[in-house]
Length: 329
Length: 250
Image 1 (cartoon, each protein chain N blue to C red):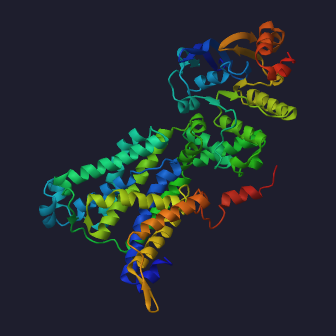
Image 2: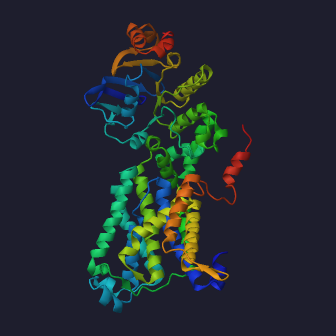
Image 3: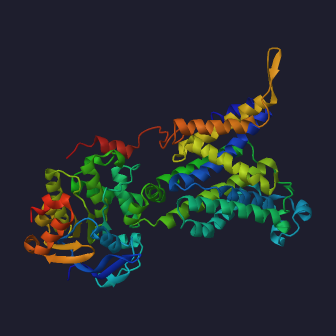
């Protein structure tokens, strides 16, 4: 709130857009954290769920008049549909989650690098299908006419809700069980934890958040096309998560803010800055190099990310404080 | 009512033609402490891995109260009432001691509140309730072992299999551990299998001992039988120099 109010009132259009985009990214990265942070398996595939969510909301919200021309192959019920923003975004998340169930049941049997590569294969499959499924997705051309409902307020609300969902998951029995399997899979199995099941739950939950992020992004741009949800977003999202600290929610959030600020700083410098009489500008593409350098520096100085695996805390939880002060019997 | 029994019946394992275990049978009864000893590489840990679902036997089967356990994955074996500890603890280092035990409750299908109650009960019972909020990764060695045992005790399993619980402990610490193991059998009516190189400890606390060498049972019986056995003496003296001092107890 403290950030949003002044931005909404005073900031320029560019700044508002930067922050809106940041909050959408936050939904994505917090969704990614829910799986990656708790399971320890790096996923390159979650932007695939973002793609699924973005197209789902396009099917549901683009006015029927426009759908006739761009996506002719939709079944009648979708072709006529024109849902409001909120139900559409939630349905988009649910579709992503539904796809994640069978995918998760198969992929979660793999471990370590094999699992990561398989998630990358999933991203490639989604991109290929959506690039060629002309009747539903208009192939590689863009679908236009998505109502631009994502503004600084709605994106902020969704980012806050995503953080709450991820926090609730982390402290739930499922989150604790999965983190135990992340640290010591063998001992977790010996403690009765079914790792495949626990990972699948996290995978589906994070797919939901990433699907919502995709829908929000579609409502931000007003346009979707498959290549907006491919490698570049995947690597930005992973850079945010890893820079901030992939095993903590606070780290995920910090990473999003840090990388967004870094990118917009370099974008400004690329456009050119004048100091007195002189003006200078960085060559285009410096922001990518800057993120690369920042990532290397952070990983050398703080291998676990800026925040490591700690969480920001307001107060100590009352139960724990009470136990500490209980006299030893 | 008969006490629960965990029976291993002619278990055999071979890796690429090498026989790690052949025709190994043993029977654990709840409330009794059973020792499993033998030189390094005798196949003791392999047997524990099989009985807890981490490894499939090439032949033979194992049953809990007459029910075949072959093919069950480890987490189902644990829910069925057979728990284990590991050489070197394998605690969840980033979690607190309380959470380490809580995870075992979650594994049994409890929610966090109920799991926490069980975890606290076990910590009290062992006498390490004051460690509850410590990070498991920061514990000294002996506490680490006791937390590992605590994690295996959550949910009152019928059997607990311990893989070298006293490794690296001083004489004094090993004695305290021995008393804890006896309490587990007597007060919690749990059947315990102890793999140990500390032969003195095994002779002190076990009512029955099985001796493995090169994957075969070379002797089984009460401590007195083992103490007198020529085969056991030979197995130890003939193989490993560093256990000669242990064998002197025999």
